[in-house]
Image (cartoon, rainbow, N blue to C red):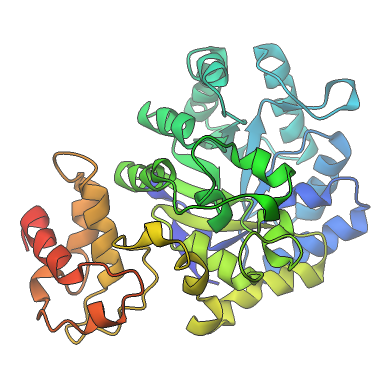
Length: 380
């Protein structure tokens, strides 16, 4: 299992994680076999947003004796008052459900305290400017959580959250259809409606800018809705010319800036093993360029697909382009991005301007020009 650094937290996550939502309302035997299969496969990050007592206790029981090395994202604000799934911004209720999560998981600490579902300005004001964030900060200070995260589906609100400096991790919904949803449309609305009837025009700049911003701030992203609720895998529901494979969806998410782990919702050993087949997939099996290339607004923009390789100077062209794109967001490149760039074995200054990369690029990116600009921005 490949692992990636979770930003400034010092932790590392498996590139494939387990979204536990499909374990809700399942008997313990299914919960246990799914979690056991995940851990045996090297998956070490689990998202537990569900507020129900039974599923939390089942997960806690399944993790008994296996907790070491497992990273848990537990949410602050997910509740089931009146036995219905709900969101609360009432501090006393949020605290009660969070401590109940610790009790049900049979632990006195978890890795990430996630500020739950910040999708609107109202939610931002209530959580970030209110007692809930202060509660999370106290939890981090006393070691009850190791880091503070937040979940969102709205790139503009998620950007505001990231810019506060309050979070270490962002749980965000990423897949090609979401990235191409029209600017005036909520991605959750597009998912709830008939995916196939939506119109897609190319990647939304607000979403790409969020990914680049998180990379520049050293805030890791874990991904939810990687498979678009399974609709991207269905010939009858995909909005694209053909269904994607799970490997293509996972690879798309993992090639976005700042992304550390793609969380996949599983409810059986077989589904876990199917997800981790990504690790053995060939480059061709992972490639989704034919899908994203059908949208002309990608022209001229690097999507970090790697089709430009190999480079005779051994430059990781996608990485150079990614760090350059992030540096362009501000007047000066962030120190963390400069460090990542200079850690590369070969950089923009090593470009021979041979043009072989531009001949292979599906998106007509001016790669040679970008290599020269990287030298100006990063100094080598």
